[in-house]
Picture 1 (cartoon, rainbow, N blue to C red):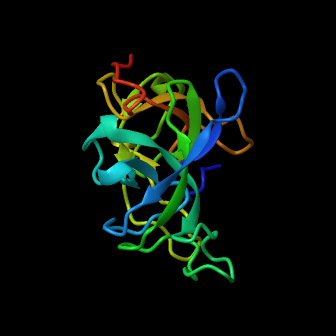
Picture 2 (picture 1 turned 30 degrees about the horizontal axis):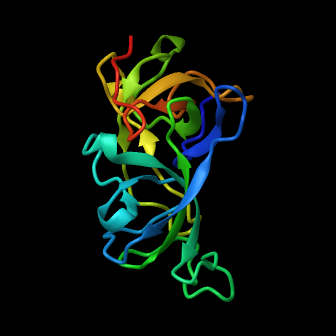
Amino acid sequence: MANRDTPQGFSPVRMLDGSEVPSMWYPVDSGNGTNLFVGDAVEIAAAGSVQKIATSGTNPTRVIGVITALQDSDEVPIGHPNSSQSTKYLPSSTAGFAKIALALPTALFKIQSDTGTTLTSSNRFNMADIVITAGDTTTSRSRHEVDSSALSASTAQLLVMDKVDEPGNTWSEHTDLLVIFNESIFNGGVAGI
């Protein structure tokens, strides 16, 4: 049975020691030029704020983590009746706050591989960059995926640790993967195998 093509961006899974992935709240400046969704990878920006990563492989050492929750500029959860934002994503050019699961060296994240390449167990410990696409305004989730066509030993944003151990998730197209951010403000980046 084939894996379903349902990109959801990143979800924090756990630290390698089994503990929870730490997270922190950071401001989003009104100058951000794109919608922000839960599951988007973000990087540090000007004046101590965060923004969605712009392009795969661009400024990879500025990645700080993954959005797990969003608030408006009054710190009210977006989509809440008292929020200034009726959407469940933060629209572009809108100030607010993002809760970020930190891309620490031992933090595992779940993300789906994209269309076009059949993955195998030999892709463990390979590196890949992120495919950045617009989020889904209906589900309010990110649509980031792993660029499976470029899995290699070369240094890249993500290190594939394994596939998610769930029924129906096979080594194939659209595999749900467990990854570590190989390039972030916490990791300088190393080559895979």
